[in-house]
Length: 214
Image 1 (tube, rainbow, N blue to C red):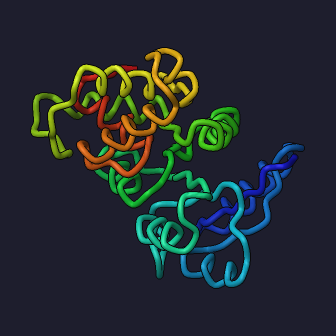
Image 2 (spheres, rainbow, N blue to C red):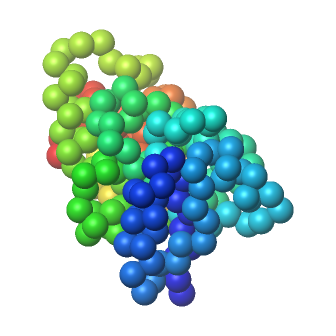
Protein backbone atom coordinates (compact mmCIF):
# COMPACT_ATOMS: atom_id res chain seq x y z
CA UNK A 1 0.00 0.00 0.00
CA UNK A 2 1.51 3.32 -1.08
CA UNK A 3 1.93 6.40 1.13
CA UNK A 4 0.35 9.51 -0.36
CA UNK A 5 2.32 12.76 -0.04
CA UNK A 6 1.62 16.47 -0.39
CA UNK A 7 4.42 19.04 -0.78
CA UNK A 8 3.92 22.69 0.19
CA UNK A 9 7.03 24.62 -0.85
CA UNK A 10 7.37 28.03 -2.49
CA UNK A 11 10.64 27.43 -4.36
CA UNK A 12 9.64 25.77 -7.63
CA UNK A 13 12.97 24.10 -8.40
CA UNK A 14 13.22 22.56 -4.93
CA UNK A 15 9.54 21.57 -4.99
CA UNK A 16 9.90 19.73 -8.30
CA UNK A 17 13.18 18.11 -7.29
CA UNK A 18 11.65 16.91 -4.03
CA UNK A 19 8.60 15.54 -5.83
CA UNK A 20 10.85 13.61 -8.22
CA UNK A 21 12.98 12.29 -5.34
CA UNK A 22 9.97 11.01 -3.43
CA UNK A 23 8.25 9.60 -6.52
CA UNK A 24 11.31 7.44 -7.19
CA UNK A 25 10.41 5.44 -4.06
CA UNK A 26 7.98 2.68 -4.94
CA UNK A 27 6.02 3.04 -1.69
CA UNK A 28 5.54 6.84 -2.00
CA UNK A 29 3.11 8.70 -4.25
CA UNK A 30 3.22 12.50 -4.55
CA UNK A 31 -0.37 13.59 -5.19
CA UNK A 32 -0.37 17.32 -4.41
CA UNK A 33 2.23 20.05 -4.85
CA UNK A 34 1.54 23.66 -3.82
CA UNK A 35 3.53 26.89 -3.64
CA UNK A 36 2.07 28.00 -0.29
CA UNK A 37 -0.58 27.15 2.27
CA UNK A 38 -3.36 29.05 0.53
CA UNK A 39 -2.62 27.30 -2.77
CA UNK A 40 -2.70 23.93 -0.98
CA UNK A 41 -6.03 24.58 0.76
CA UNK A 42 -7.58 25.75 -2.52
CA UNK A 43 -6.49 22.52 -4.20
CA UNK A 44 -7.85 20.43 -1.32
CA UNK A 45 -11.43 21.73 -1.44
CA UNK A 46 -13.72 18.70 -1.34
CA UNK A 47 -10.80 16.25 -1.26
CA UNK A 48 -9.42 13.88 1.36
CA UNK A 49 -5.93 14.78 2.63
CA UNK A 50 -2.86 12.73 1.81
CA UNK A 51 -1.19 10.56 4.45
CA UNK A 52 1.72 12.96 4.96
CA UNK A 53 2.07 16.67 4.19
CA UNK A 54 5.53 18.24 3.88
CA UNK A 55 5.42 21.93 4.77
CA UNK A 56 8.06 24.63 4.39
CA UNK A 57 8.39 27.30 7.11
CA UNK A 58 8.76 30.51 5.10
CA UNK A 59 6.22 30.99 2.29
CA UNK A 60 4.25 33.91 0.82
CA UNK A 61 0.50 34.41 1.42
CA UNK A 62 0.35 31.73 4.14
CA UNK A 63 3.48 30.66 6.01
CA UNK A 64 4.26 27.31 7.61
CA UNK A 65 2.77 27.80 11.10
CA UNK A 66 -0.51 29.22 9.77
CA UNK A 67 -0.67 26.47 7.13
CA UNK A 68 -0.31 23.78 9.80
CA UNK A 69 -3.03 25.42 11.92
CA UNK A 70 -5.38 25.45 8.93
CA UNK A 71 -4.56 21.83 8.10
CA UNK A 72 -5.46 20.83 11.65
CA UNK A 73 -8.64 22.92 11.52
CA UNK A 74 -9.75 21.31 8.26
CA UNK A 75 -8.49 17.74 8.62
CA UNK A 76 -7.86 17.17 12.33
CA UNK A 77 -5.14 14.76 13.41
CA UNK A 78 -5.74 12.07 10.80
CA UNK A 79 -3.05 13.57 8.56
CA UNK A 80 0.62 13.75 9.54
CA UNK A 81 2.48 17.01 8.98
CA UNK A 82 6.25 17.12 8.62
CA UNK A 83 8.12 20.42 8.51
CA UNK A 84 10.93 20.60 5.95
CA UNK A 85 12.91 23.81 6.41
CA UNK A 86 16.32 25.40 6.07
CA UNK A 87 15.80 26.99 9.50
CA UNK A 88 17.15 25.23 12.58
CA UNK A 89 16.44 27.72 15.38
CA UNK A 90 14.70 26.05 18.37
CA UNK A 91 12.19 28.92 18.56
CA UNK A 92 11.03 28.26 15.00
CA UNK A 93 10.94 24.51 15.55
CA UNK A 94 8.73 25.06 18.59
CA UNK A 95 6.49 27.42 16.60
CA UNK A 96 5.79 24.70 14.03
CA UNK A 97 5.24 22.00 16.65
CA UNK A 98 2.98 24.30 18.63
CA UNK A 99 0.93 24.84 15.48
CA UNK A 100 0.46 21.07 15.28
CA UNK A 101 3.29 19.67 13.14
CA UNK A 102 4.36 16.08 13.87
CA UNK A 103 8.01 16.59 13.14
CA UNK A 104 10.85 18.69 11.78
CA UNK A 105 13.54 17.87 9.22
CA UNK A 106 16.14 20.24 7.82
CA UNK A 107 16.48 20.72 4.06
CA UNK A 108 20.11 19.65 4.18
CA UNK A 109 19.12 16.23 5.56
CA UNK A 110 19.93 13.15 3.52
CA UNK A 111 17.24 11.48 1.45
CA UNK A 112 17.45 8.46 3.77
CA UNK A 113 16.66 10.66 6.77
CA UNK A 114 13.70 12.21 4.97
CA UNK A 115 12.29 8.76 4.11
CA UNK A 116 12.84 7.70 7.74
CA UNK A 117 11.04 10.84 8.99
CA UNK A 118 8.02 10.13 6.78
CA UNK A 119 7.86 6.58 8.06
CA UNK A 120 8.25 7.65 11.69
CA UNK A 121 5.48 10.26 11.67
CA UNK A 122 3.16 7.58 10.30
CA UNK A 123 4.27 4.86 12.73
CA UNK A 124 4.81 6.76 15.99
CA UNK A 125 3.48 10.25 15.16
CA UNK A 126 6.71 12.23 15.46
CA UNK A 127 10.22 12.75 14.19
CA UNK A 128 12.78 15.38 15.18
CA UNK A 129 16.06 15.58 13.28
CA UNK A 130 19.00 14.67 15.58
CA UNK A 131 20.71 17.91 14.52
CA UNK A 132 17.68 19.89 15.71
CA UNK A 133 17.53 17.90 18.95
CA UNK A 134 21.17 18.72 19.75
CA UNK A 135 20.61 22.42 19.06
CA UNK A 136 17.55 22.49 21.29
CA UNK A 137 19.59 20.98 24.13
CA UNK A 138 22.56 23.29 23.50
CA UNK A 139 20.33 26.37 23.49
CA UNK A 140 19.06 25.56 26.97
CA UNK A 141 22.23 26.81 28.73
CA UNK A 142 20.42 27.55 31.96
CA UNK A 143 18.04 30.01 30.32
CA UNK A 144 14.37 30.19 31.23
CA UNK A 145 12.38 27.45 29.57
CA UNK A 146 10.18 28.31 26.60
CA UNK A 147 7.55 25.94 27.95
CA UNK A 148 5.11 26.19 30.81
CA UNK A 149 6.25 24.04 33.71
CA UNK A 150 3.99 21.83 35.77
CA UNK A 151 5.63 19.16 37.97
CA UNK A 152 5.54 15.71 36.41
CA UNK A 153 5.04 12.59 38.49
CA UNK A 154 7.56 9.75 38.41
CA UNK A 155 5.19 7.71 36.23
CA UNK A 156 4.75 10.63 33.83
CA UNK A 157 8.51 11.16 33.63
CA UNK A 158 9.05 7.49 32.89
CA UNK A 159 6.44 7.57 30.16
CA UNK A 160 7.93 10.74 28.70
CA UNK A 161 11.31 9.04 28.42
CA UNK A 162 9.71 6.05 26.66
CA UNK A 163 8.01 8.41 24.18
CA UNK A 164 11.42 9.98 23.51
CA UNK A 165 12.77 6.49 22.86
CA UNK A 166 10.13 6.21 20.11
CA UNK A 167 8.08 3.52 21.81
CA UNK A 168 4.52 2.86 20.63
CA UNK A 169 1.58 2.99 23.06
CA UNK A 170 1.54 -0.82 23.10
CA UNK A 171 5.26 -0.97 23.95
CA UNK A 172 4.80 1.70 26.62
CA UNK A 173 1.87 -0.14 28.20
CA UNK A 174 3.89 -3.37 28.26
CA UNK A 175 6.94 -1.64 29.74
CA UNK A 176 4.98 0.14 32.49
CA UNK A 177 2.61 -2.80 33.03
CA UNK A 178 -0.45 -0.64 32.40
CA UNK A 179 -3.33 -0.82 29.93
CA UNK A 180 -3.22 1.04 26.62
CA UNK A 181 -6.08 3.22 27.87
CA UNK A 182 -4.01 4.20 30.92
CA UNK A 183 -1.05 4.92 28.64
CA UNK A 184 -3.27 7.21 26.58
CA UNK A 185 -4.40 8.93 29.80
CA UNK A 186 -0.77 9.51 30.84
CA UNK A 187 0.06 10.86 27.39
CA UNK A 188 -2.88 13.28 27.47
CA UNK A 189 -1.88 14.40 30.96
CA UNK A 190 1.67 15.05 29.74
CA UNK A 191 0.33 17.16 26.88
CA UNK A 192 -1.82 19.14 29.28
CA UNK A 193 0.93 19.73 31.84
CA UNK A 194 3.61 20.70 29.33
CA UNK A 195 1.36 22.70 27.02
CA UNK A 196 2.44 20.62 24.03
CA UNK A 197 0.06 19.52 21.27
CA UNK A 198 1.55 16.19 20.20
CA UNK A 199 4.33 13.68 20.80
CA UNK A 200 6.84 15.72 18.79
CA UNK A 201 6.28 18.62 21.15
CA UNK A 202 6.77 16.32 24.14
CA UNK A 203 10.17 15.22 22.78
CA UNK A 204 11.28 18.85 22.36
CA UNK A 205 10.05 19.61 25.89
CA UNK A 206 12.00 16.66 27.31
CA UNK A 207 15.19 17.71 25.55
CA UNK A 208 14.79 21.38 26.50
CA UNK A 209 14.23 20.49 30.15
CA UNK A 210 17.15 18.04 30.28
CA UNK A 211 14.84 15.07 30.89
CA UNK A 212 16.08 13.30 27.77
CA UNK A 213 19.28 13.72 25.80
CA UNK A 214 20.03 12.44 22.31
